[in-house]
Amino acid sequence: MDPTVNHLIQLQELTQVREEQRVAGGAAHLERINSAIDSMTEQLPSGIKATFEKLHKKDQHVIVPVSESVCSVCGMQLPRSLVQQVRLAEALQSCPNCARFLYMPDAVARNVRPRPGRFDARKPGVSRFSSAGLMIPDLGCDTKDDAIAALANRMESEGFVDKGELLLEEALRREALYSTAVDHGLAFPHVRGVEGGALALAVGLSKEGIRFDGPKGELTHMVFFMVIPTAASAFYLKLLAGLTETFMDEAPRAALMEAEDQAAMWKVLVKVTRKAIK
Ligand SMILES: [Zn+2]
Image 1: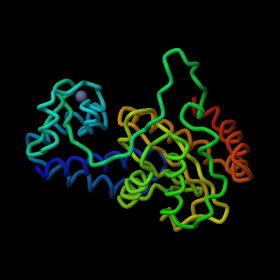
Image 2: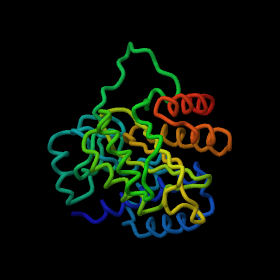
Image 3: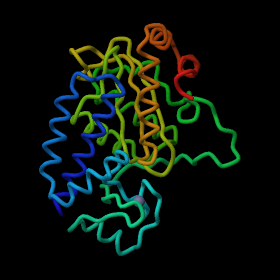
């Protein structure tokens, strides 16, 4: 396999972490992430480095997964021979339409919930990508592995994704790169590249707190777990910003933590995020 493929994937992940940290307020670590990004960019072969920088100016999508023979960002149906070359990964390949580099992901979970039809009424706020069934008022565990496992399994049992165990694996890999826990006892574990449907959000609470490697060793009390199709990356950052903004304040945090059951939790979530999440 061409080592540049993995190098680009890792570099792109770091640029995504940087955006997430900017949005969710972890600015203290930006310097460290920036220097890692700079040194990884320097290590790229010169032609690829130029393309990387050019693509990166447009958006964060530089190397994107092929999903069912389609470029997951621009949606172009790729020729079979190209898909085969991407799978072999002997050399870096690009999408003929959007020029982004392509890679074939390992086994990944897929979003299996049908997208809303063109004529379905557009639901407001969080109702578009979550539901009462995805609320867990008491996670009943104290480690991030168990917390993410509970949320990933819930997404599977509620029919949002297949293969919950693959989601868990991917989410933990992302956590290992950089903890998604931020101030105020919030954490935003997630899995990108879950194609086939829309973004989905599951929320779990813990009054006792979960060890999530958060800033200053703070325990996490609210876990927002998201699966994100590649094409929804920009929306995901907006959502992350909306949730962070909402729960920076004490009152909405207290209101959600007080919810005793799924229905109550869902009602509070819909209400307190109404302004920040359109
Ligand atoms: Zn494309």
